Image 1 (tube, helix red, strand yellow):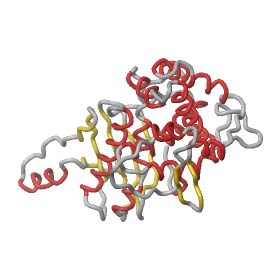
Image 2 (cartoon, one colour; image 1 turned 30 degrees about the horizontal axis):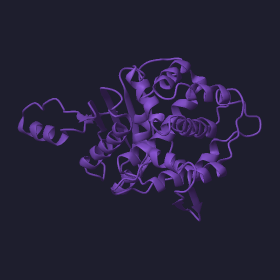
Image 3 (spheres, one colour; image 1 turned 135 degrees about the vertical axis):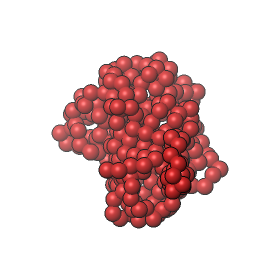
Length: 318
Protein backbone atom coordinates (compact mmCIF):
# COMPACT_ATOMS: atom_id res chain seq x y z
CA UNK A 1 0.00 0.00 0.00
CA UNK A 2 1.11 3.56 -0.63
CA UNK A 3 1.53 5.74 2.43
CA UNK A 4 2.34 9.39 2.85
CA UNK A 5 3.22 11.31 5.94
CA UNK A 6 0.24 13.03 7.48
CA UNK A 7 2.30 15.75 9.14
CA UNK A 8 3.32 18.23 6.51
CA UNK A 9 1.45 16.51 3.65
CA UNK A 10 -0.26 19.67 2.44
CA UNK A 11 3.01 21.62 2.41
CA UNK A 12 4.65 18.77 0.52
CA UNK A 13 1.93 18.81 -2.14
CA UNK A 14 2.34 22.56 -2.63
CA UNK A 15 6.08 22.19 -3.04
CA UNK A 16 5.59 19.35 -5.52
CA UNK A 17 3.42 21.60 -7.67
CA UNK A 18 6.12 24.26 -7.59
CA UNK A 19 8.77 21.78 -8.74
CA UNK A 20 10.74 21.90 -5.49
CA UNK A 21 11.49 18.86 -3.34
CA UNK A 22 9.32 18.41 -0.24
CA UNK A 23 11.13 18.64 3.11
CA UNK A 24 11.32 15.66 5.43
CA UNK A 25 8.00 15.41 7.30
CA UNK A 26 7.96 16.58 10.90
CA UNK A 27 6.80 14.04 13.49
CA UNK A 28 4.52 14.95 16.35
CA UNK A 29 6.44 15.95 19.48
CA UNK A 30 4.43 14.74 22.47
CA UNK A 31 5.49 13.56 25.93
CA UNK A 32 9.17 13.64 25.02
CA UNK A 33 8.58 11.42 21.99
CA UNK A 34 8.61 11.84 18.23
CA UNK A 35 5.59 10.16 16.64
CA UNK A 36 5.56 9.75 12.86
CA UNK A 37 2.12 9.40 11.24
CA UNK A 38 1.68 7.66 7.90
CA UNK A 39 -1.64 7.98 6.11
CA UNK A 40 -2.65 5.55 3.38
CA UNK A 41 -3.12 7.32 0.08
CA UNK A 42 -6.92 7.24 -0.03
CA UNK A 43 -9.71 9.75 0.03
CA UNK A 44 -11.02 10.36 3.54
CA UNK A 45 -14.08 12.49 4.05
CA UNK A 46 -12.41 13.89 7.15
CA UNK A 47 -9.72 16.53 6.82
CA UNK A 48 -6.22 15.31 7.57
CA UNK A 49 -6.10 17.67 10.55
CA UNK A 50 -8.85 15.62 12.23
CA UNK A 51 -6.83 12.41 11.90
CA UNK A 52 -3.75 14.17 13.21
CA UNK A 53 -5.68 15.44 16.22
CA UNK A 54 -7.03 11.93 16.89
CA UNK A 55 -3.46 10.66 17.22
CA UNK A 56 -2.51 13.66 19.37
CA UNK A 57 -5.37 13.07 21.80
CA UNK A 58 -4.42 9.43 22.30
CA UNK A 59 -0.73 10.26 22.75
CA UNK A 60 -1.59 12.94 25.31
CA UNK A 61 -3.77 10.50 27.25
CA UNK A 62 -1.01 7.90 27.41
CA UNK A 63 1.51 10.59 28.36
CA UNK A 64 -0.78 11.75 31.17
CA UNK A 65 -1.01 8.24 32.64
CA UNK A 66 2.67 7.31 32.32
CA UNK A 67 4.15 10.73 32.99
CA UNK A 68 5.78 10.67 29.55
CA UNK A 69 5.18 8.92 26.27
CA UNK A 70 6.45 5.36 26.85
CA UNK A 71 8.93 5.22 23.95
CA UNK A 72 11.08 7.96 22.41
CA UNK A 73 10.11 7.13 18.82
CA UNK A 74 6.97 5.59 17.39
CA UNK A 75 5.12 5.32 14.10
CA UNK A 76 1.37 5.24 13.51
CA UNK A 77 0.03 3.88 10.23
CA UNK A 78 -3.58 4.71 9.34
CA UNK A 79 -5.14 2.50 6.67
CA UNK A 80 -8.39 3.22 4.88
CA UNK A 81 -11.29 0.85 4.45
CA UNK A 82 -14.70 1.39 2.91
CA UNK A 83 -17.30 2.55 5.43
CA UNK A 84 -17.21 4.33 8.74
CA UNK A 85 -15.68 3.96 12.16
CA UNK A 86 -12.38 2.57 13.44
CA UNK A 87 -12.06 -1.13 12.77
CA UNK A 88 -9.32 -2.45 14.98
CA UNK A 89 -5.60 -2.05 15.36
CA UNK A 90 -2.37 -3.89 16.05
CA UNK A 91 0.87 -2.90 17.77
CA UNK A 92 4.39 -4.11 17.04
CA UNK A 93 7.88 -3.86 18.50
CA UNK A 94 9.80 -5.29 15.56
CA UNK A 95 11.59 -2.83 13.32
CA UNK A 96 10.85 -0.04 15.79
CA UNK A 97 7.71 0.69 17.78
CA UNK A 98 4.64 1.12 15.60
CA UNK A 99 0.95 0.44 15.29
CA UNK A 100 -1.54 0.33 12.46
CA UNK A 101 -5.23 1.11 12.57
CA UNK A 102 -7.98 0.80 9.99
CA UNK A 103 -10.28 3.80 9.60
CA UNK A 104 -13.34 4.08 7.39
CA UNK A 105 -12.96 6.43 4.45
CA UNK A 106 -16.35 7.86 5.46
CA UNK A 107 -15.54 8.07 9.18
CA UNK A 108 -16.88 11.15 10.94
CA UNK A 109 -15.45 13.37 13.65
CA UNK A 110 -17.84 11.68 16.07
CA UNK A 111 -16.38 8.28 15.17
CA UNK A 112 -12.90 9.50 16.11
CA UNK A 113 -14.12 11.22 19.28
CA UNK A 114 -15.72 7.98 20.48
CA UNK A 115 -12.77 5.79 19.55
CA UNK A 116 -10.74 4.01 22.21
CA UNK A 117 -8.58 1.89 19.89
CA UNK A 118 -5.77 4.38 19.27
CA UNK A 119 -5.14 4.85 22.99
CA UNK A 120 -5.39 1.07 23.55
CA UNK A 121 -2.67 0.44 20.97
CA UNK A 122 -0.37 3.10 22.42
CA UNK A 123 -0.68 1.59 25.90
CA UNK A 124 0.83 -1.57 24.40
CA UNK A 125 4.00 0.40 23.71
CA UNK A 126 4.61 0.77 27.46
CA UNK A 127 4.97 -2.88 28.50
CA UNK A 128 7.55 -5.50 27.53
CA UNK A 129 6.63 -8.36 25.24
CA UNK A 130 6.10 -11.52 27.29
CA UNK A 131 5.63 -15.20 26.33
CA UNK A 132 2.38 -16.06 24.59
CA UNK A 133 0.81 -17.70 27.64
CA UNK A 134 0.86 -14.28 29.32
CA UNK A 135 -0.94 -12.48 26.50
CA UNK A 136 -3.66 -11.65 29.04
CA UNK A 137 -1.40 -9.13 30.81
CA UNK A 138 -0.66 -7.27 27.58
CA UNK A 139 -4.30 -7.03 26.53
CA UNK A 140 -5.63 -6.68 30.07
CA UNK A 141 -3.38 -3.71 30.77
CA UNK A 142 -4.42 -1.98 27.56
CA UNK A 143 -8.09 -2.66 28.33
CA UNK A 144 -7.82 -1.35 31.90
CA UNK A 145 -5.44 1.58 31.40
CA UNK A 146 -6.99 3.04 28.23
CA UNK A 147 -10.16 4.55 29.74
CA UNK A 148 -8.34 5.73 32.86
CA UNK A 149 -5.68 7.39 30.71
CA UNK A 150 -8.38 9.11 28.65
CA UNK A 151 -10.07 10.27 31.84
CA UNK A 152 -6.77 11.63 33.18
CA UNK A 153 -6.53 13.73 30.01
CA UNK A 154 -10.12 14.96 30.41
CA UNK A 155 -11.51 12.99 27.47
CA UNK A 156 -13.80 10.78 29.57
CA UNK A 157 -15.55 11.31 32.88
CA UNK A 158 -15.07 9.03 35.90
CA UNK A 159 -18.73 8.03 35.56
CA UNK A 160 -18.10 6.82 32.03
CA UNK A 161 -15.02 4.86 33.12
CA UNK A 162 -16.68 3.13 36.07
CA UNK A 163 -19.95 2.66 34.24
CA UNK A 164 -18.15 0.77 31.48
CA UNK A 165 -16.24 -1.32 34.00
CA UNK A 166 -19.41 -2.20 35.90
CA UNK A 167 -21.10 -3.11 32.62
CA UNK A 168 -18.27 -5.16 31.08
CA UNK A 169 -15.90 -6.54 33.74
CA UNK A 170 -18.00 -9.68 34.29
CA UNK A 171 -16.66 -10.95 30.96
CA UNK A 172 -13.31 -11.56 32.67
CA UNK A 173 -14.68 -13.90 35.32
CA UNK A 174 -13.73 -17.60 35.08
CA UNK A 175 -16.25 -20.01 33.59
CA UNK A 176 -16.56 -23.78 33.94
CA UNK A 177 -13.31 -25.52 33.03
CA UNK A 178 -11.18 -22.41 33.59
CA UNK A 179 -7.53 -23.15 34.43
CA UNK A 180 -6.31 -19.70 35.35
CA UNK A 181 -5.10 -16.75 33.32
CA UNK A 182 -1.98 -18.45 31.96
CA UNK A 183 -3.93 -21.44 30.64
CA UNK A 184 -7.32 -20.06 29.57
CA UNK A 185 -7.00 -18.13 26.34
CA UNK A 186 -10.57 -17.11 25.61
CA UNK A 187 -11.34 -13.56 24.47
CA UNK A 188 -13.05 -12.72 27.77
CA UNK A 189 -10.27 -14.01 29.99
CA UNK A 190 -7.55 -12.45 27.80
CA UNK A 191 -8.97 -8.92 27.66
CA UNK A 192 -11.30 -8.65 30.65
CA UNK A 193 -9.65 -11.27 32.84
CA UNK A 194 -6.43 -9.33 32.43
CA UNK A 195 -8.28 -6.08 33.13
CA UNK A 196 -9.76 -7.61 36.30
CA UNK A 197 -6.25 -8.55 37.46
CA UNK A 198 -5.18 -4.93 36.91
CA UNK A 199 -8.18 -3.51 38.78
CA UNK A 200 -7.61 -5.81 41.75
CA UNK A 201 -3.89 -4.95 41.76
CA UNK A 202 -4.59 -1.21 41.59
CA UNK A 203 -7.00 -1.40 44.54
CA UNK A 204 -4.71 -3.61 46.63
CA UNK A 205 -1.63 -1.44 46.09
CA UNK A 206 -3.60 1.63 47.15
CA UNK A 207 -4.96 -0.15 50.22
CA UNK A 208 -1.47 -1.27 51.25
CA UNK A 209 0.04 2.21 50.80
CA UNK A 210 -2.79 4.29 52.29
CA UNK A 211 -3.57 5.45 48.76
CA UNK A 212 -0.08 6.91 48.32
CA UNK A 213 0.71 4.65 45.36
CA UNK A 214 -1.20 2.73 42.74
CA UNK A 215 -0.80 0.69 39.59
CA UNK A 216 0.54 3.70 37.61
CA UNK A 217 3.60 3.78 39.90
CA UNK A 218 4.33 0.14 39.10
CA UNK A 219 3.76 0.52 35.36
CA UNK A 220 5.87 3.67 35.12
CA UNK A 221 8.72 1.89 36.88
CA UNK A 222 8.54 -1.05 34.50
CA UNK A 223 8.64 1.28 31.52
CA UNK A 224 11.48 3.38 32.92
CA UNK A 225 13.50 0.24 33.55
CA UNK A 226 13.45 -0.36 29.81
CA UNK A 227 10.24 -2.35 29.61
CA UNK A 228 8.60 -1.56 26.28
CA UNK A 229 7.06 -3.53 23.44
CA UNK A 230 10.49 -3.62 21.77
CA UNK A 231 12.01 -5.96 24.38
CA UNK A 232 11.25 -9.51 25.53
CA UNK A 233 11.02 -10.03 29.28
CA UNK A 234 9.83 -12.85 31.50
CA UNK A 235 6.58 -11.71 33.10
CA UNK A 236 8.02 -12.35 36.55
CA UNK A 237 10.75 -9.76 35.93
CA UNK A 238 8.22 -7.09 34.99
CA UNK A 239 6.08 -7.81 38.03
CA UNK A 240 9.08 -7.70 40.37
CA UNK A 241 10.17 -4.32 39.00
CA UNK A 242 6.62 -3.02 39.41
CA UNK A 243 6.31 -4.37 42.94
CA UNK A 244 9.56 -2.72 43.99
CA UNK A 245 8.16 0.67 42.97
CA UNK A 246 4.73 0.10 44.52
CA UNK A 247 3.97 -1.90 47.66
CA UNK A 248 6.58 -4.61 47.32
CA UNK A 249 4.30 -7.58 46.71
CA UNK A 250 0.88 -7.21 45.11
CA UNK A 251 1.59 -7.80 41.42
CA UNK A 252 3.58 -10.98 42.02
CA UNK A 253 1.28 -12.33 44.72
CA UNK A 254 -1.87 -11.74 42.69
CA UNK A 255 -0.23 -13.41 39.69
CA UNK A 256 0.59 -16.49 41.77
CA UNK A 257 -3.03 -16.61 42.91
CA UNK A 258 -4.58 -16.22 39.46
CA UNK A 259 -2.15 -17.80 37.00
CA UNK A 260 -3.15 -21.47 37.22
CA UNK A 261 -6.55 -21.62 38.88
CA UNK A 262 -9.86 -19.80 38.60
CA UNK A 263 -10.34 -16.99 41.11
CA UNK A 264 -13.94 -15.85 41.41
CA UNK A 265 -14.50 -12.19 42.34
CA UNK A 266 -17.78 -10.93 43.77
CA UNK A 267 -18.11 -7.99 41.38
CA UNK A 268 -21.44 -6.63 42.73
CA UNK A 269 -19.82 -6.41 46.17
CA UNK A 270 -16.67 -4.81 44.73
CA UNK A 271 -18.69 -2.09 42.96
CA UNK A 272 -20.61 -1.50 46.18
CA UNK A 273 -17.40 -1.09 48.20
CA UNK A 274 -16.02 1.27 45.54
CA UNK A 275 -19.23 3.26 45.66
CA UNK A 276 -20.18 2.61 42.03
CA UNK A 277 -23.96 2.45 41.68
CA UNK A 278 -25.26 1.46 38.24
CA UNK A 279 -28.99 1.51 37.70
CA UNK A 280 -30.86 1.54 34.38
CA UNK A 281 -27.62 2.32 32.57
CA UNK A 282 -26.92 5.39 34.70
CA UNK A 283 -23.99 5.62 37.12
CA UNK A 284 -23.86 7.49 40.40
CA UNK A 285 -21.23 7.46 43.13
CA UNK A 286 -21.60 6.73 46.84
CA UNK A 287 -18.76 8.65 48.45
CA UNK A 288 -19.48 7.05 51.84
CA UNK A 289 -18.44 3.62 50.50
CA UNK A 290 -15.35 2.07 52.13
CA UNK A 291 -13.23 2.21 48.95
CA UNK A 292 -14.60 5.50 47.59
CA UNK A 293 -11.31 7.32 48.19
CA UNK A 294 -9.48 4.67 46.21
CA UNK A 295 -11.98 4.99 43.38
CA UNK A 296 -11.47 8.73 43.37
CA UNK A 297 -7.68 8.32 43.33
CA UNK A 298 -7.88 6.01 40.32
CA UNK A 299 -10.10 8.45 38.38
CA UNK A 300 -9.92 11.98 39.83
CA UNK A 301 -12.59 14.39 38.67
CA UNK A 302 -11.54 16.39 35.62
CA UNK A 303 -13.18 19.59 34.40
CA UNK A 304 -13.06 19.09 30.64
CA UNK A 305 -15.41 18.00 27.86
CA UNK A 306 -15.99 14.27 27.60
CA UNK A 307 -16.72 11.93 24.73
CA UNK A 308 -19.23 9.14 24.34
CA UNK A 309 -17.60 5.74 24.09
CA UNK A 310 -18.47 2.94 21.72
CA UNK A 311 -18.95 -0.46 23.40
CA UNK A 312 -15.81 -2.53 23.04
CA UNK A 313 -17.50 -5.30 21.11
CA UNK A 314 -18.07 -2.95 18.15
CA UNK A 315 -14.39 -3.13 17.20
CA UNK A 316 -11.34 -5.30 17.68
CA UNK A 317 -8.01 -4.17 19.05
CA UNK A 318 -4.79 -6.06 19.39
